[in-house]
Length: 319
Figure 1 (cartoon, rainbow, N blue to C red):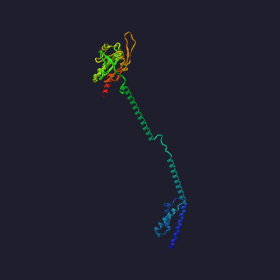
Figure 2: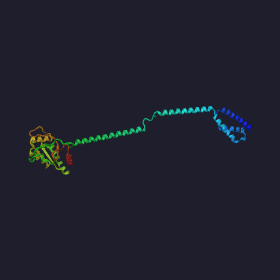
Figure 3: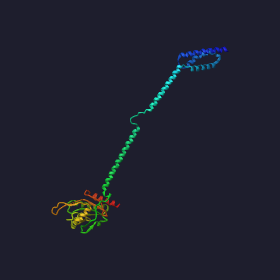
């Protein structure tokens, strides 16, 4: 038995030496499965059958584990160097990636966010400009309305006490007209065209105001030509326009005072014998029930605008 074991060990050493020499000559990766198959018959020839299959398998595992441990150091070195290189490559690649990550990424000239911000800013500017423009136009309109309304912002220094004679020869003052709305026109009976036109307009407006709203208006005619317009002359003149038209005249001083109180301009023109004209203001004054000035109407107002203007002022006064 001892002899058999010693022979078997010698043969195994021989086989092992042959395997080592064969592997070193091949310069290939670790023993593959093909090599194991080639070595298996050799093992079977060396190991007696009496030892059985189990001992052969155990030795085979020991043989291949030792052979795997003794793999060509050059291959290991090359592999480790390759791994090191690949590791360095990965490291350098990682450092390059990190360096690339640190660098700012340059995109397009306009991003979506900047585009949306630009659109929103532009819309806001347009909205603000449009709002300011509308507000400015509204302020202008309000200012123009305030200027047109004029007297509503405050009472002008127009009007005052007077003492005159009516077309019936009675002395009258401003107190005789308290509690009534009056329209006053300054003119003269020898006026060729303007005064008749204005008095006809005045008479028509008085009737339309009465018809539309039922407001009673007293029309007054004050002469600025006291030298020729006496009581009889004025009486005959006012009958031609309206039955309620009141004609007033007076002395030179009395007419001068009342004209000054109502800011009326008048002046005689060049005389030709006894026939002359009087240049004067062409204005109608609306006076309230307390004989305070309310509004004036010029020559540019026709019957309708005069009617509507008087009605508007009366309604405003009654509010």
